[in-house]
Image (tube, rainbow, N blue to C red):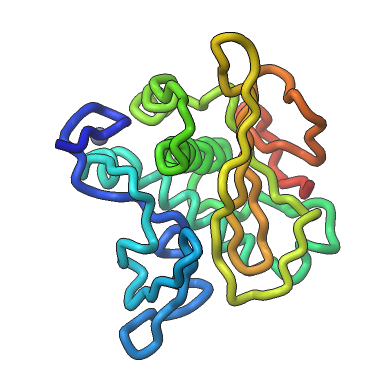
Length: 227
Ligand SMILES: [Zn+2]
């Protein structure tokens, strides 16, 4: 039996690597007649729907966690990425984006929910990439709707994606330290169109220089500074 890493129930569902709503925003309707192509482990896979298993993490979570528990996090993330995709032509040239209109609800809650969506994605990514890591504090944050102190994200202007018809997640980069070895830094990219979103994990201070402006729910400014 597969166990949900968030709550311990039986796990039967899988999270998208790039959210289905983001895939639809970029590529429109995906069908057998107009499929998407993705490369995994050096092999090209054909997606005949955005719900294809090839579009998802191999890590499984339970139905409850993937729907009831995290639906509002997913919705906030879609509102943020829709806003970023709608503004992608200026992202390379401006330093801040007014964030007051991104969410249909409260701004602080919107940022918290986006953060918690990334906490869920981080857990699935860590398991998928087989990084030894204790995810219990991440699971606790998802279940209690509290921010994780050590997870950040940024819109990283240093990555220049030229193609609007593109969506991908990068492999995770990890730095270990100490004895026994512990992950002290982890980073990966979630790229949609010309919008490169960097997700970063570090405790207190990063072990390597981190450029740009890290977004975290404890910093409640109503604009997004671009990295
Ligand atoms: Zn669960």
